[in-house]
Length: 357
Ligand code: 2NL
Image: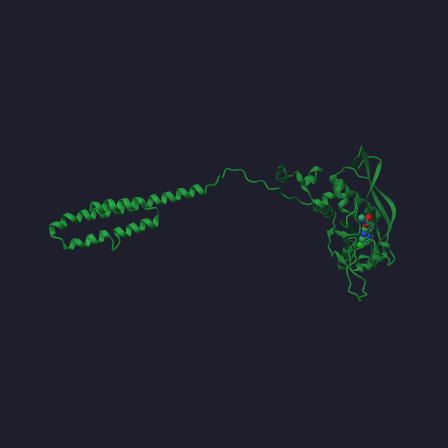
């Protein structure tokens, strides 16, 4: 008996894992285990022998049982300790900062100018960037022999050989959007059309894709005075100036008559541009009274209705407002570049944090 006790307690203590321990349990306490065999032998013993051996055997059984349980608990503890050691995680470590994106300056400027014109009652219209030549040219009173319709400026879409229809174009201005708006809505109408436009031009100050916003107001007696007020009001709000002064210079566009190029009063003091003051003028947009042919193309009777229209480059006014001197800011969209030029969206602390590494 003492041999059994020593043997099993030693094996239990040496069991390396749960499986080893289970093998020991079966050998000792299992149905065909050594203790069970001894229990069975009690039946062949005399009463006195049985009275002596029984309690010893029972005591041995519970001692081994307890030792098994204790060893099992110890093995589980050790396994947990090992796991905690390998799966340890320092939740107090600082996070890894990730550089964050921000709204593109062109998108922000589009939102700004849309909000300003919306306050003045203009709705936003959108349309296709691939246009028919009718919407892009004919409807705007641009004659077939006009230079813009020749190869130079315009991206023409492909036509199959033998297909003699005039090719579609990448719109060269957002005016076709306003033709479509006039056709859909009729007069009176007040819309702006911001969006991408395309011209075959690529140098320091031109990109083949750029952004334009055009505006259109048609009613029974819209005048150039209202055009001027609308543009002044826009410039005051957009450039955040108390005072603006605009100058209309006679000009020519096929789609307006009369036409005016619009300059804003400014100063250039040692290379620093200031809008709203000074003795210089900076051209910012083109405008005029909508040509009767263009009204007709939009399905509006020029004997009953008239109105103004204007168009300006968004990239250009974005650069003016935020002091961005170079188109690379738009190509590369590099946050460090934009921050260098004090782009306003970067003033938000959460965005600045992403840049500070
Ligand atoms: C410029 C000149 C201009 C328009 C665009 C327009 C649109 C319709 C009818 C008449 Cl539907 N006109 N647009 C008018 C005058 C000038 O843009 O220099 N843009 C950058």
